[in-house]
Structure formats: C-alpha cells, structure tokens
Image 1 (cartoon, helix red, strand yellow):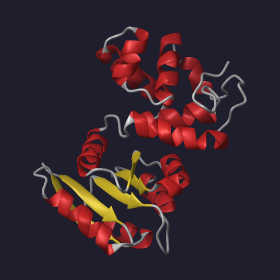
Image 2 (cartoon, one colour; image 1 turned 45 degrees about the horizontal axis):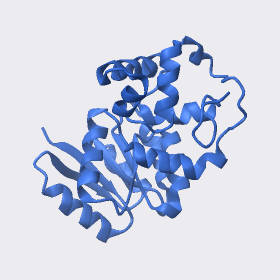
Image 3 (cartoon, rainbow, N blue to C red; image 1 turned 90 degrees about the vertical axis):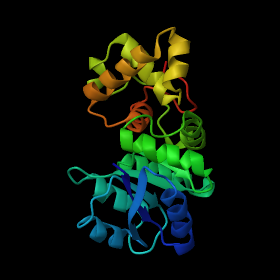
Length: 225
C-alpha cells in the first residue's frame, strides 16, 4: 500500500518539485496539497493522509501552529517539517508541537524519501547528524542548569535506560549507541522502546526534546552532572 503524502507549502514551484520526486516512487502517492495552514486543516478533514510535508513560514497559519493542531487530533498523520538553515528555530518549535521530524528543503531527494519512509514506519525519523546540527544551533535556548531532572517519569528508568536516553539525546543512532555501550543494536532498540513507553513519548525526537528540557542533558550535548 502506498504512503499517502500531503504537501503543504505556499510556493507552488516547490510543491511541484516535491510532487515530481514522490510520483516517481512506487510506494508513495501525493494525495493532497495546500498553500497554507488553514487550507491544510480543511483538506485533512476529508482526505486520508499518512505523512504531511509541512513548510513552516506560510500565510494565514504557519507550519508550527498547523502541526500542533494536526497532531492534537486522534489518528493524526505524521508531520515532517521542512526548513532552511536560517529557519531552524521553527523546526525546533515544530518538533515540540508534535512533528515527527524535520528536513532541510535542499536535502537530496534520496534523503527526503528515506525520511518519509522512516516517519511512516515509526523508526528513527531524522538523521542523527541533522539532530546534532539542530542541537548545536539551539543549545543556548535549552536548559543547562545541571540540576537533577524534574520530570517525575524519568525516575522509572533503569540506569541503563537513562544512559541510552542521554545518548539518543546527543543524536547518536542505535548503531552508534550499541558500539558505545558494547551492546547489540537489537538490545538498544529494545531499550529505546521501553524509554518511549515509560515516558509516554511518541518517538526519538520527543526523547531529545525532553532530555534537554529537563536538564538530563546539558546544552552543548553533555550529560548533566
């Protein structure tokens, strides 16, 4: 069954370019388009969509607020934020609003297609290198107090799960975490799954956001001491 994709961007040429790339894929189908957030919400009421490619800077209703409204609905489609280097603050806000990932607009087509498939399947939703780049840019905006995390659910994590969570928050992939902790990738994946369940989080992106907001990981990527 094809992945049903919706394109939300106020630039028609960009939507056309994305549509051409997606149309060439046997497992993807562009089922809807919108030029702003208001239109996107209206279209989604009558169209079944799996993944939304969401621009952030649009008229009427921006991508962050649109993402928040979409993700608040039951059985909502996954949202993949599209941004540029100078708009990364919107990407971070979008992740907090419920987006499952973010990509740069000038990303190579193969990387964009891989991101759509990852978001749809629920696996890692952004490249670890991209996560690290965003965190490096936004570390000044995030807590760096070094205080003990206040999120009460963090207390439910085992020492190993907390260790894995800190490495996820630093942008490491399952393979990199496995090598660092001398574990199998399958074991790391199991730990990540338990972390998501215990903390009531949807995906790795939310793990990153929570780890920084609670001070579990300090701004700049290090563990809070």
